[in-house]
Image 1 (cartoon, rainbow over the protein chains, first blue to last red):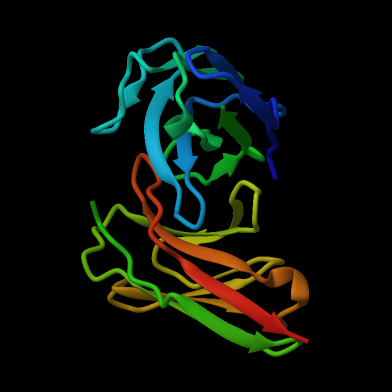
Image 2: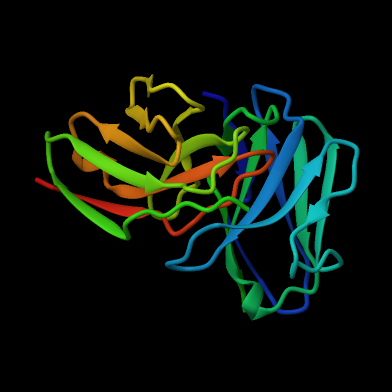
Length: 115
Length: 107
């Protein structure tokens, strides 16, 4: 199947700093990319959906000014957590898709720890 | 959003078949039924998906009820590597995860 990578796989940052997470579709062009967050022992929660060249659509309760999403090309999307706080510590997972109804391919996740 | 209901957990013995049920009584005609699984500290892995007909692939089989209000993921011979959380998801334009079923495989 198609491969999606994320970088970094883990990151530790200090409270108040910003962190950027990259998501790449390595062998296909993704019309749509998705960002999820997963807290320990919980399921994945959809944060936002982005289409290449368009502004991301954020889920209710997700602050768009805090979680900046850029989808500049068909193979790259970035999530920037601005002014991170300890409560932002989580497992962030991206996925990419050719579009409905096709399957989504998920990245390996990025573990963010804010100290 | 159309929701799915799955048992919280199931157990299986190694090399035996496993049937993981999913109820989705509010499914609409355009919803595809997707199954993913997730191992600890990893991203979800695609397993199988279907619309109306039963589907088979190298990983599993998907049996879809005639009224589409339920489906069953079938692992024909469970291995220890199949221990994971299995998610049944109705997909339109995006994918929203429920709690899933935690499958334990006993040797």
